[in-house]
Image (cartoon, helix red, strand yellow):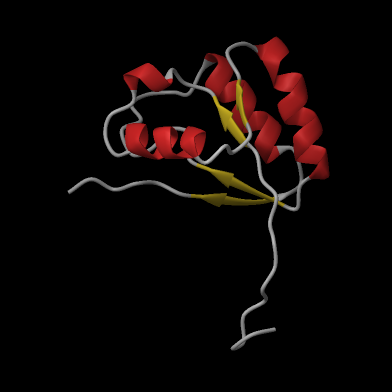
Amino acid sequence: MLGGYLVGVALFKVFIVSDPSKYPEPARRNYELTIKLGISTMMVREVGDSEYLEGSLKECAIVIVGLIGISLRGEVVGLYRDVIEMINNSGKVVVNQYILRY
């Protein structure tokens, strides 16, 4: 402990469900930084790709989600729905993070 905060190392993986070439700012900048820092990333393009995600969900302590953002319109369908249901059914603590644009 240092100053009331636990000092340690967290290992994490980033799973990308959308096409990074279509990211608006600041999402594009964050994606580029993730790659530049060498953070482990995995593209999830179809349900078959989600096996690795499912395995990682079993191993993790917490899930941080920034999947859709604030621009959602209508019902969530397809791969996004499958991934959301997988996360919700994981039994893990889930924290949603969104980048607000002013």
